[in-house]
Length: 156
Image 1 (cartoon, rainbow, N blue to C red):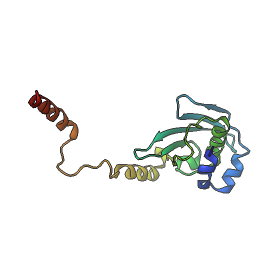
Image 2: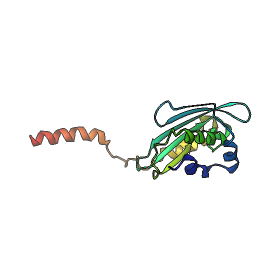
Image 3: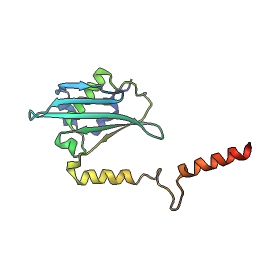
Image 4: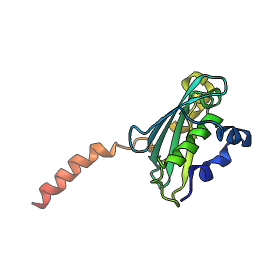
């Protein structure tokens, strides 16, 4: 089985990975399938929260969305606390249902407090070309009902 460590740790600084190995999350819970919540005591003694949520892509693959309350996590960057939680998730097998060949992307979500980073993330998601409609195109949900009803009526 390919672990989260093998799949995602190339995104982390080597110093963060080394520090993560000495951090043990205080609490780890799996409230729903594909979700993990953890509390971790940071180097500064402050308690940090990490949330992970697994979701499927439309074209295959999975995204592991993470929210972390450390300074780096709030800025949308990988950190030792997030790496420590990923190690614990691996150890407990909480997300072990991800198939080995399934591509996995880590999305570290910046908090709204970081302003520019959050605005950049929102701009990136708003320009999704798969969901953009052609100008003047009708909503397919509006057209589907009457067309289907008309076809059925003419076939009877």
